Length: 406
Image (cartoon, rainbow, N blue to C red; front, side, top):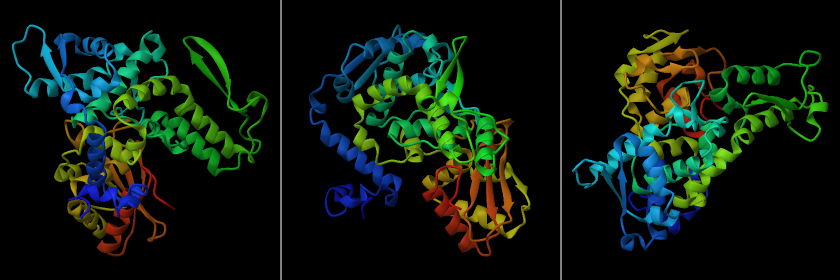
């Protein structure tokens, strides 16, 4: 009912907007689009933004032309693209191609704006060393405007980011589990610290040493942190602070510049109805997942292809909607992006890492859990198809990426 009539969320169903976990993604998206259009009634009267760009310098030329205009004008105007020395008229196809080219060029290492995730090499994170580019903050603002404009105009981008960056766009807190995508080895050390007694084992203080363009610098995680030892009693505080430093504070300038541009186009309070998985789908769209290819490139540990739970797993996957399959892929691998070559070249922290289903020998009432660095799902030995499907659906719908409730 809500899907077919999103205006209901302005009336008696408005409570759903403030409890977005209840809503399906397409309901949120319809409501989001409706609210965007209502905000800008001047859109129909705004002159087109005509961009003349050289095909080999699309990113730089667009950056310079965006820089001359206000966020409001960019938001409300229709983009009309003309490639230099080409005779084509833009009836929609050229601007679509323009968005596609820009989505590739924003990750060009020569601009030093983003680095690939250490976990999958498919998703991107703001580069903490982007300052080697003197104009890096202006470029981040430009990228924020570009992605915001793509969302506003309903254009999908082949651009995938780390879960922690999506959280920062949404104004949400990160936690230590988000470190896995950026630094898998360091993440493992944090997990070990949390799960073990560190008394007389770990010699650390509340500070971190960083390299800033060849110069070593010590950053205190709290006042006088370099003089405060990490102990069994305060280790949880340490993990929280080091996570904040690595994922938030280290790239704060870059993220703030990106958000300045993004919020020129998309209001912060409106984008927050989505969670981080849904934001990826909003920017990049639902993937076309070939289940047969996925199944053919899956490794089983503890199970075999003939195990009832495996038969039920793939039966459940086939019963899912396209959105639910995308969320399952996000849950297991950290992103909904499938390599162009298919699942045979799915990337993990050590290079090519096929999708894996491991037998979970614990409580059969537990939800499935996942390890995104290894593209791995730990699947309990459910006794019926209904139990497996119900728990798998609950895990991908309610849990943070890669981690089920215990």
